[in-house]
Image (cartoon, rainbow, N blue to C red):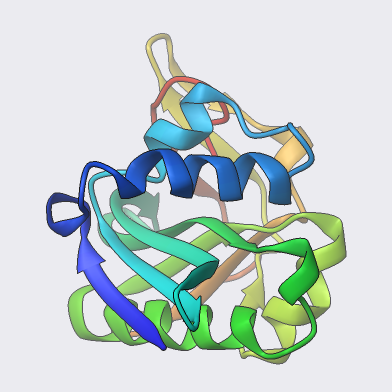
Length: 175
């Protein structure tokens, strides 16, 4: 079963369960900033019976590209419990999130872990080939370490995948 709801619709008792799922799925490499980035948007929760086995969220961000500020649905916190992987739960999460992106944003975007690149590409997400940057406190700063890990899902815009892409500032990992 899938449940799609805004952060405000999540029961307070569910938040620590979600956080634990993400901590375990990311092998302890899911920071407080990563958690914060996953809140304030729309969540897709996948259940196997009464057990929460998958999660993902779409939060609004502004990406700068081609002289425009693009209202972007940014995908965060996609995870499936280890013992429930390879059963289609990740695809179920992403189908719900892609629906949110297509209905509410001009562009979808995400930063993919290397082991998830084929998964996102297989769903039609396009790898960003151009340089990435962040509009930080000191102006535009390159984020070379993120080059090649960014993917977009065009909705109402057709971006130049070889052009520069700039994200808005946030604490922790900016992408």
